[in-house]
Length: 191
Image (tube, rainbow, N blue to C red):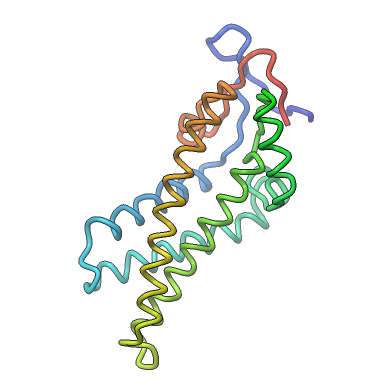
C-alpha cells in the first residue's frame, strides 16, 4: 500500500500517518457521549432521553453519508464488511501477524457496522414507542431494550478489541481517534 502522507514522529523510526478526519472523530466521540448520556444519565421516560436518541440517529446518518462522500479512509470501501476476511484476519492474528491496518481491521469493520446498525435499531424502536400506533406495545419496548443491551455488549467488545489491537500492533488506537493519525512503529507491515 502506498503511504501518501508520512511524517516522522519523535520516536525513533515511528511515523505518523493521517487516517481519521475531524468529522469521523467528532462523530465517534459524540456518539459515545450520546450512549453514555442516554444509558446512564437521562430518565428513559423524559424528553431529554428522546432528543439525545435523535442526536445519536443523526450522528449515524451523517457518518453513513460521510462513508460515501468523505475522504478515502472514512469510506465504506476502506473497511467493507467481510466475515470471511475477518476470519482470515483472526487466523493471521493467532499466527502472530501484527500488520497495521490504516483504516479498520476486518474485525473492527464488522464491529463498526454492528454498532451503527444497533444504534439505528435503538433509534427506530425508540421513535416507534412515541407513536400512537406502537405506544405501549410490549414487543417494541422489548426490542428497544434488547438492542440497547446488545449495544452495551458491543461497546465492551469494541473497547476490548481496541485494547488488544493496540497491544498487538503497537499502535495506540485511542490516540489515533483523538489525533487523527496512527503512529506506526518502525518495521510494521501496513495494509
